[in-house]
Image (tube, rainbow, N blue to C red; front, side, top):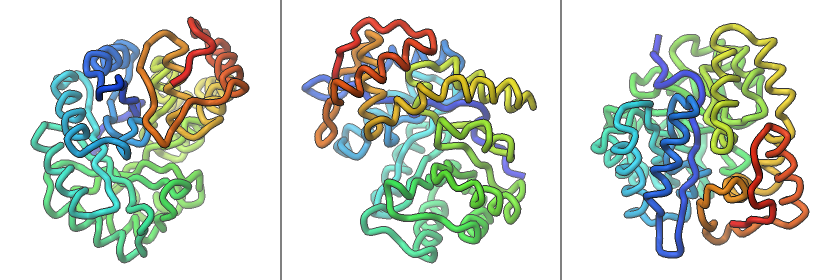
Length: 302
């Protein structure tokens, strides 16, 4: 049995920017807000953190800052994936040297890979690190999707700890668990599927919604961990409007706008991401208020 890197809710934290670069003071405030809100882990430099538009130097600096700021109070998962295997390894080794608790490694994108290529990619990295790896399956973004059989082969490696499963394919999750058993951990990569996936045995969620309301995703995931699926399902259903609104445009556009609406001043998005439409801002503002959040600036952008 592989002990999961974390159980419960992990925030896929945004990266706050100024026009000159990463706003580390604001990042520190966001980290403290997450820990105070009950978040179990922080994922730095993921999709939601706009890692794909960061320089290598910024990427490394964000990981190092996050690890130091968290200071072992919760787990830190560093996004270190790339469509270049060597770059992914280099980032992973740097995150490991900083003291990250886990590595989130997305499947190669654009150039993609066969299933054999995926096995080679992850094995190459796993053979050279000593920090547990979470494989990230998000075919809607990468054009690459794992099979259960590939998961099974990779689950044999001691450094492969689990999967962030964001394909929305419950059949894949079921077949993976049937093949791998306790030799792999699964976390939901979709906020609107936390309860159903945890009912199958997932250990929690790596969440976008935690950015705006960490208490919500912490409570939902912990109810599932306690076997209180009916209560967790009520939370899932009653807050689906928020989950939908946070993906009304491509992530992380809505979540960054939402944080600015809440007065948290996380700054702009980086191109090619851009501010969201006024019509979608209205949808987002209403969704934030529907879960009890105070919208201080309903017309804020990013």
